Amino acid sequence: MKRNNKIAILNLLITKKKITRNELAEILGISRMAVSKLVKSLIEKKYIIETDTVDTSKTGKKPKYLYINLDKFQNIMAIYFGLSSVTISIADIYGKILTTESISIGSKTDVLNTTLKKVSEILKKYKIMLISIGMNGIVDSFRGIAKISTYYHWKNLNLKEIFEKNFNITTIIENGVNLIALSQSKIYESQKDFVILNIENGVGSTISKYDSISNKRIFELKEIGHIPFDYSESSLLCVCGNKGCLETVMANWRIEEKVYTKTGEHFSYDKIIEEANKNKSFFRDEILTLLRPLSYIILWINNLITPEKIIITGKITFIDNFFWKELKRILKNNSLDKTKEIIIERSDYNDNLIIKGAIQYGIENITNSLFFESMFKGESNV
Image (cartoon, rainbow, N blue to C red; front, side, top):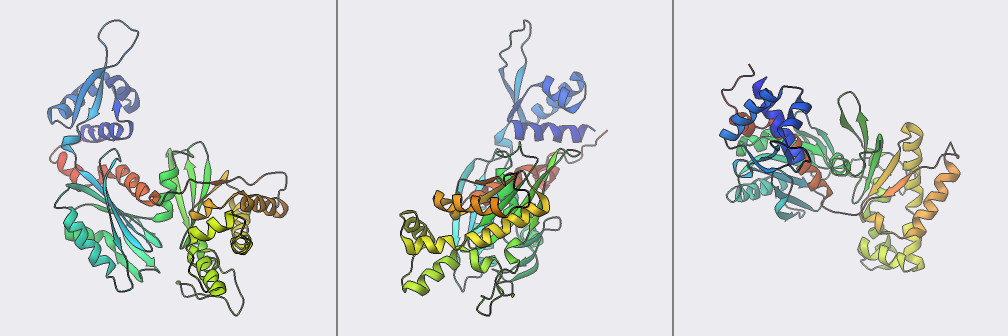
């Protein structure tokens, strides 16, 4: 168990940043002497350092804190294949972002090859031990496959295999909304379960449940944006191939399109919200059209799983209280259990939530990387 315990120690130091030998012995359930032997080996290899005496009221030899030696560890690369750009960030083992670059996506952009080229350039400047990818669509995270990406027209594309073959760096992949949930999990860790509803140029959701047996959060992705909603003859064709999906009536681009059709002027989604918040009746009326599909989603979610909280992310959260008060009224009047309030919370908007989630996902999977395997090559668990 020596090798596994060493990895466990490094994992704890990554998540906690500092820890004492006594705390390690208690958490790992092994003797103080066994911990000392493991720590000694890790210090000799310069993987960890020991410094800063712990201030205690007890007399005698004071314990010291153990830290990761950042000089011995490489960085994490997080990539988000977004709808209008590809974002690439480099972060250290603690999640501190060191640099971020972005690739604009045009109609003729070869997204994958352009990204591979950019990654090659970045690898000349930074040493990377793991690549963590986030994307919209259906993902097989176990095998690293982009099963369906309607925006990039990818189907069963093995991103893990492509990146590992090109760079010989362990690569993991996860759905973007799951990564949003992961990035928010510390904020909402007191909730047994919650739902993330992300409304941007696409509509996605994920259910976050706490599993008491494994002491971990489980994320269940739901392709809620492709639920049929508009059955009229004039319903729009969705990128998934069906007509009238929720995404075609709720996405940011749809509101922009509707305003342009009626005014002949191009207004950004941000500007439309700004004007609606100024009580400009035309813009306010357009924003209020979101209430019907949004309440439809929320009521269905609440009827099916009754989460403790539904968290909404995206620029829709910039809309003032006139919208949210009306949403609250609609939900109260139409919920099955009118004695129990459906808790809706607006998350602070951050267009880097998926990147932050990808970094966190990378940190949680560092010990499964080829880099970590090389650190303990030849060591046994005996």
